[in-house]
Amino acid sequence: MPKAGSRYVYVYATLGELAAFIVGWTTIFTRTFDTCVACRGIVSYVNEVADNAFDKISPNLFVEHNWDLYSSVSVVCVTIAACFGIKKSAWFNTGLAFVNIGTIFFVIICGFILADFSNWNEFLPFGVSSIFKGAANAYFAFSGYSMITVAAEEATEPSKSVPIALIVTIVFLTITYSMLTALMTLMIPYTGKNCFL
Image 1 (cartoon, helix red, strand yellow):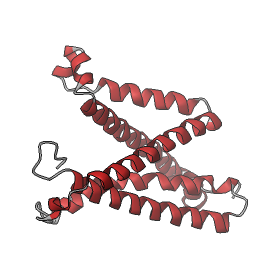
Image 2 (cartoon, helix red, strand yellow):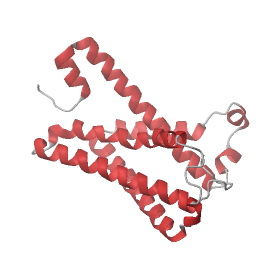
Image 3 (cartoon, helix red, strand yellow):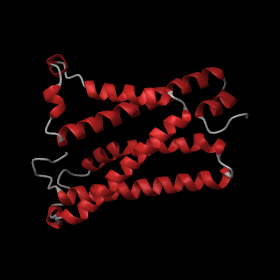
Image 4 (tube, rainbow, N blue to C red):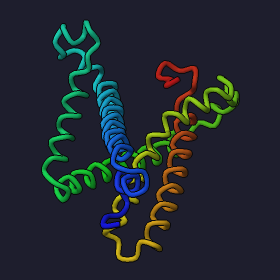
């Protein structure tokens, strides 16, 4: 095959043009949905930290109909950044990744400082179903590692570097999400006002 890594190319080579067309548009829809969910989450967190500042300055029309203007603007900004080409959008993506990782380590450090193990006296207060709700939210962290396989074409030794990159990414995500979840439950009691459940 002339190109490697992309789902579209693999499906095109094995199942034909119609199946590749469907997979290509499904991939675009999935990436758009992932971006919308991420932007919605970021705006919600910033709004919570800023004492609902976005809600206070939003026009009444948006508040009445529960439209999220700032998440929409965030999605448009990310789309514009992607339109500038692969190199510039890669710089933008790398910058966001560093902000994300920095935030994760900041929360982990604060979690160790503010941990209160008495919060774990009643373990699993909402039952096993709450684990599956949390796992559904954590799924979006794992949706991005498929980009490693798309970039396999540019790897010098893809048979070694791609599997190593995939394994390291999955292990890193699993450990950091598990640590963050444990530390959040140690910092904030599930009965508290700011409970996320």
